[in-house]
Length: 289
Image (cartoon, rainbow, N blue to C red; front, top):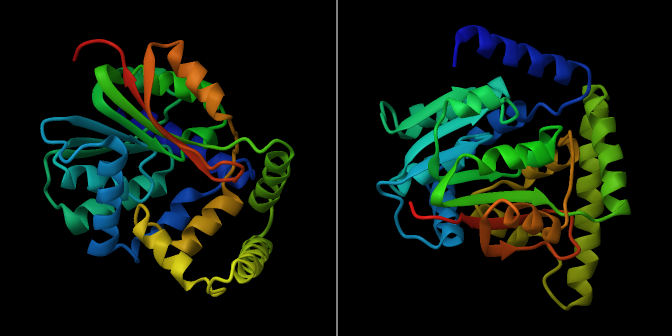
């Protein structure tokens, strides 16, 4: 990507964060990097392999759109894929580069770039991939449906598209959007209070739910499970959720219909039911590789 274009993208991102139009995801991921160890990497690798229903990605080209911390990209490398990572947030790009330096230095089969999934000329320069991956990203671009259309074009015939998109909860989603927008437009101390308030509410609610179900009411087992699921962190996921803006949502049938009309077949689906989290989809593009 030309240097001038990288500078323009970085400037646009900085302006959006400064104006309260976008959450600074990279700052959160920089803190999360300190927690990444071999146990988290193994969990992320196992989760990726499970959802894609593979044991190896050797000989496959994998693109990680919105790479964030770089953990999923590293997992794909551990499975043998040739990986390209990119992100719109310069700090996320730096996080991915730092993770590569720590765990895969001088790896010629892992490339990292700075770019936007809404920049069609940039995407056209990348080619096509056997696995197109974007977890929890496209609904935070500010133009989710265009982003979804763009990533579909990157999939080779016979290739797979693995995405996760926030579940549409109707009125609840509208209220969450308001909270997220408030977070991004507030000073740092208010942001911290919002995160603590949401975390306290969830933990209190879950405490009594477990108590009624005659389960251990303490949250430690759930926190450990979070680490085992994609190698993620309870605190950093909470900050990401409360602050994550822009914020768009979709019902599973909307995503299904959208990609079916574009020649994709749904092969795996994990839904949140009535929850606020992400529904996960694996599609396969029709045609022979």
